[in-house]
Structure formats: C-alpha cells, structure tokens
Length: 138
Image (cartoon, rainbow, N blue to C red; front, side):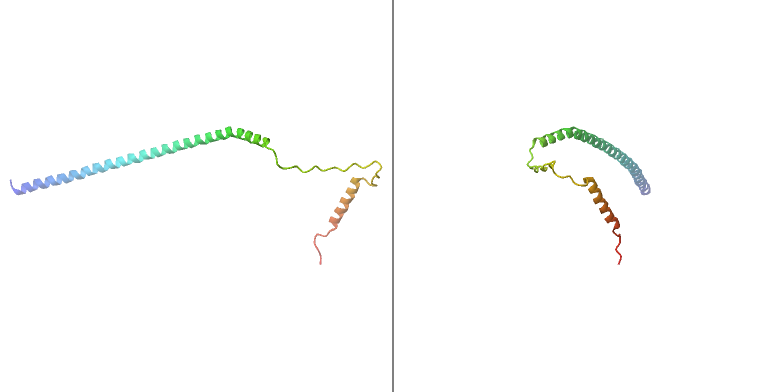
C-alpha cells in the first residue's frame, strides 16, 4: 500500500466523520427546537390554567365575603341597637317652656283680629319692597 492510498482513506474517513457530525448537529438542533416549542406550549397552558383557577378562587372568595357580610349585618345592627337602648344619656334635656296663664275673660279683646293685623303688616312690607328701586341713580 502506498502512502497516497492511506492518505486518501484517512481523508475520506475524516470527511465522513465531519459530515456525520454536521448531520447529527442538525438532528440535535431539530430536537432542541421541538423540545423548546413543547416547553413553550406547556408553559402557556399552565399559565392559562393558573389564571383560570385564580379567577375561580377570587370569585369564590367574593361570594363568600358577600354571604358573610349578609350574615353579619343583622346581628351587628341588633347588637348596636341593644347597646344604644341600654345606655343612659348624660345629656340633660332643656327645661320645657312654661306657657303663660290664659287671659282672663275680663281682658279687653283687640279691635282687629290677629289675622287681619298680620295681613296688613305683610301688605305694607310687600309695598315697601316693591317701591324700592332696583338700581340707585346718581
């Protein structure tokens, strides 16, 4: 065997080895890309499930809070009203107004009735207001 043949076989072997490495690199790259796509899809699905479950939990908590508020409102109002009714006030009410004694039957009656005197007062007041000029002249 001559050296040329050995060199040619060695070169062919190295070239085949390099070519095989390139093909395997391409296969590995395709596998990595497929795995990355699968991970991205799975992550999106998990995130959507998480959002859906979080909303379901929030809705349940909100409904429970409303139910609890309804259950506590009546006893709270009842207890507050009982506390309010059971306490004594420290505020002393003002003394009631004492009415004057009624006039005696011998007291002379006014010449004009009260309603007539009020009507005349209101009429004079209205005339006084309507006679007042709206703007002052100089």
